[in-house]
Length: 382
Image (cartoon, rainbow, N blue to C red; front, side, top):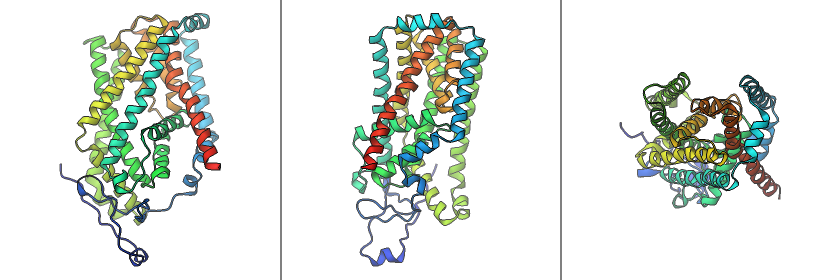
């Protein structure tokens, strides 16, 4: 595979008259992105100015939450939960009794593992940003690790309250506000990160499924692996299409979109070069997701093997990508109950595990995200 062709940077005449030309936004191995950036070091941004919605900052997230499509998605999630709750004949009293008996220390350990994962994810993202030249050495004031963790948590919070995985775009927007790095460049690193996570998730989930079920996979597990295979294949086809069609697209796109796509394209492939370290980190992150679910089951006194916990946790993560409800709300809970039933966990206990795990992976994010979001709004209004 050959390296992507560098795009020449052309400054408008007025920039040339204002003084010596500043170095362009240069990522790994001396490659240069199309266009330049209005960075703290004085580099000029040749791309489009932010839209009015972007300039509104966190307010735009509030507006998206109040849109009819978002309210409909929450209604759909409630309908899915109610349907499975009634169909599986779950005993609410037994579920409540299980939750009351949960070991708080084991639950807090599971909660801690979940939030420690954000530190690992943010550190990996920082390394990816460094590969595409978004770092202090190129004049971009990338926040320290706690700041990147806050951005990461806010993006997941956005995914919890609006459908269609808009939190990824929100993360790129928050990075742009913090560093003045191009939105498309940040989005490119996030897209590469998602592709790496998808591949690692699929491999880890497949190994866990074989470990649990052997050669006799139940229909539900088989369908899940087929769906994962299709997603990985779709990602590979999309990546190949991006690589092969860059020149064609750049010739046909309008000037402002050509520059944005050039930055996106370069960021994706710069992030994916030598991905072994990022893949290893991703596998570790996914295994920690399984450990979290194992600890949740342990806190409730349920007998769930670590392999089964990994399989169910990764299946749940895969289902959060479904864009119909925020963070797969309703869909994930139903799938967890069905899959835990394959491990001979009764419906009431499976429901208790699903509820407690989603308290960590969904509802705690809503609470923590609201606090961070309110603080950011106050800071913007000050």
